Amino acid sequence: MVKKINQIITLILGTKLMMWAVPDTKRFIKGTIITAAVILLTMYFHGEYLSWAELSGHTTYLSISYLIKNLIILISLVILFFYLKKTKKKVYPKVKGEEKIYTKGTNEDYFDKFRNKKKLRSRAEQLLERNEKDQKKE
Image (tube, rainbow, N blue to C red; front, side, top):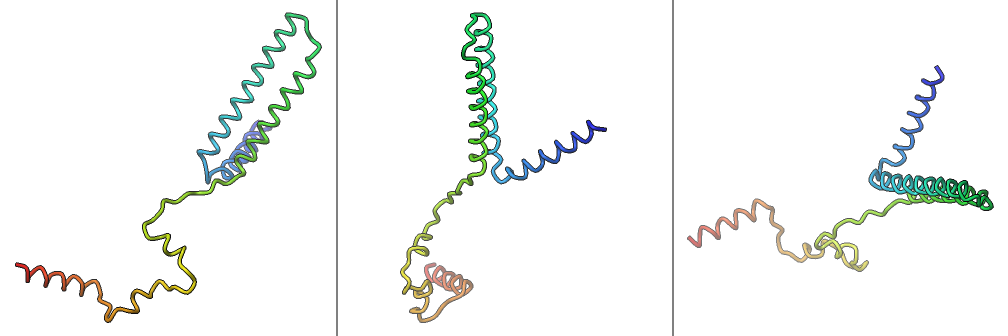
């Protein structure tokens, strides 16, 4: 019964974590993999140091090694948290003519070019006119 409750709690927490990171899944996966690698390497090197200290008998820095190991793990987790919390600004490709819309002066109006025309033509009128010109050429 306790095992099932633990599985349900793990599923709920995992789902909450993924829902928090879903908008940028690649960023989540990359950050998690890098953090896991840092933690695993830290634990591996600490284990190697403990083995060396046991064999050589130099045990004066054991407490400092545990402190450094735990600080590295804590710092990497904090960095991961802020890395995932920071939203990456999306860069949209430039559209031709779009800069004119955003850089116009306040006294300019987008529809000024249409106000000075004698008559506005619909798409159908433009197609008919083009067909007439093509027939005259023939």
